Length: 245
Image (tube, rainbow, N blue to C red; front, side, top):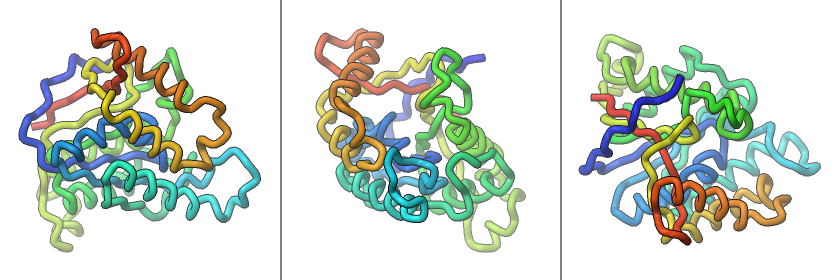
């Protein structure tokens, strides 16, 4: 199973909502793209499902990790010009499922933010690389978010408690999936690479053990750019785009 070819991106986007499982997910896959959108005048907001309590590579006490990673994510967002960062409550790193409860909470976020575009993790596994993008939490968030976009967020008869709270139905016009199989829409990230690196360095609990983070990123993103036919020396991030209207 794979995605169909990407739809052309809509051209009049005013707001993007980025929805991911853990702090640093958006930055590893999409920080340069986010920085580009912000520079183009698009409003970007984040919703993180967990605070990454199972992350880290040192002896940081477990009880300190959620607060530490939340602070890291806010600093990383600031490096890209993003000021709206929200964390859901009641979900834990490594234990996320595409539950009805998660769908409800994501519908509430969609109706609050009312984005034209959503950026999220792929609900489809990459069998050639089951680590990283295919983390079960990533797949679960991608699936729950897709269900939240359609049919839940636009259906006035779904989740009447949200309507009673003043959260009116909203149609998200497209979803950009990160980390899925065979992404075919590449974004030139060359001019925003330094901001991506700064955002990832802000996630010190997750990246300071890496010997050559910059070299690793340039390798990944350079390969993505070459696959998209970009000139030597450029770097890119790639997605699948699904229209939802």
